[in-house]
Length: 323
Image 1 (cartoon, rainbow, N blue to C red):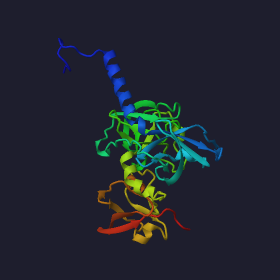
Image 2: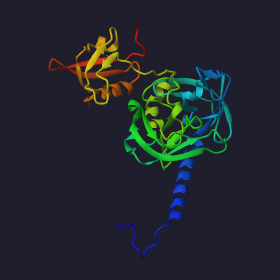
Image 3: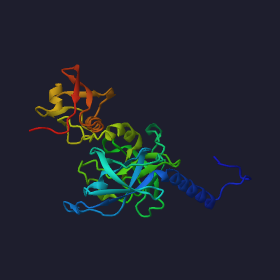
């Protein structure tokens, strides 16, 4: 099938390349006013064996009254002072309001006299694997943002908490936006790992072609809680799942810790989970993903099959488990 008639004028390769480059630049230009540079002063020089970076990092304006989201990795040093440089060059002191240690993001607040420009959010339902994705940062040159072009390479990664891109992602643009070709924000760039919840997990993958972003739509949903100063933590149920491979393993409870949220809800060893929050469950990995999507203090409705009978339990997830 021909895209144009042989006699018609088709764009040459150089023309297509120019149009493509213009589209990328226009997308970054659209989000640029909302991308800020973050500078930290003081704090720790290293965490464990890792020497912490002292250079500037990136943040994204998410509310016109001065709220800014960034990656928690940028604040591992526990800095004594935080400065935000806006796109117009103004520098403002910032305070850390709250953090989300499940998705490794933080919320900052600066005082502003005029409303700040806020980016447009791309709905998660419209995201498609293979679409253009541009990682944006403002660490190198405060006067203009940096960009790295790739595609959206996967959805529902890190147990349903993140989207994945092959655009170059590193400490320079952690906290910055991942945008689509229209300049809408897909998510906020963070280092994450499917194997570890450690605060530095995933950093070793930077610039590897595997980068993650917390969907911007989710950040908008939790923003009211963060604004109130609520620190969000991963939810824990206190169960063990059938292994050794969760991807193919059956959704059967093989352990239930005493005094855990699951035990308090009536979950028993041998129960087969068939539904969580209205979603059908067929594999053990789906249970882990369902828990990972929730925060401590939230409740999951779980349907189990016990002695061929369905039973419904409500599990209120905890932030930690006692002895």
